[in-house]
Amino acid sequence: QKSNRTIPPLKNKNMADRDRQVFQADDMHRASTVMIKIGVETVKKNPLKVGAYIVGILICLLFNGWKIDDSQRSAYQQRIDSFDYVKLQEAGIILDRATNEYQESRGFFFSCDAICSMKKEEMEEAKLRYNTLAAEEERNRSEGKSQLGLFSEVGVAETRELFWLRF
Image (cartoon, rainbow, N blue to C red; front, side, top):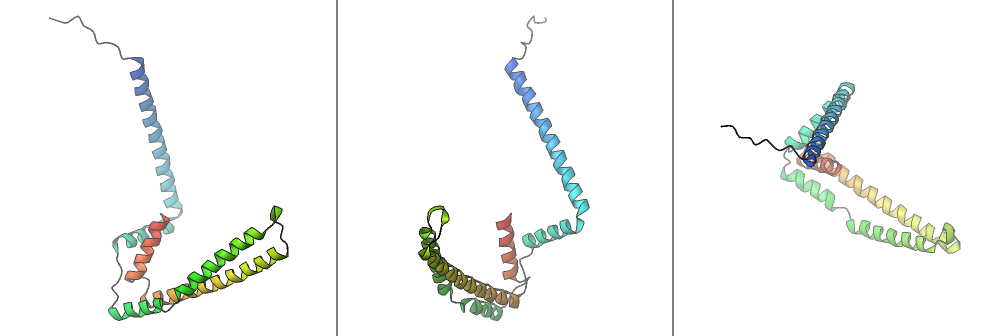
């Protein structure tokens, strides 16, 4: 025997939800197609850049760097430790203080009187001293790393760290 019952029609809410889901899926399909096309065009226009980028990523992810021996590691560490970081930190504190004093001495609409001019000169001197020490520290670190090489453990680790900070 057949039943006389019929399947109740879908409610309007269910149909609207289904239509919205179909529409969202269609939009995602279009967006992903556009992104893939842009990616393919970029690779076609810049094959060397994209290839170098991929090689760089592979090196960062898969290559840990060449081992450095104890003498190289100790020479590098002595080079890094030879810089007086306390001086650099003190110069930074002095620069911050001078900058704050200069900012506080400025007048209405950033006008500057004699005291403000003096504070600005002090700030510029502090900035010059800090920048000189920071450049010296960077030069010291760079010379230490150049003795180890770009593909040493230290070089690859730094490159990997910079990559992850960037992306």
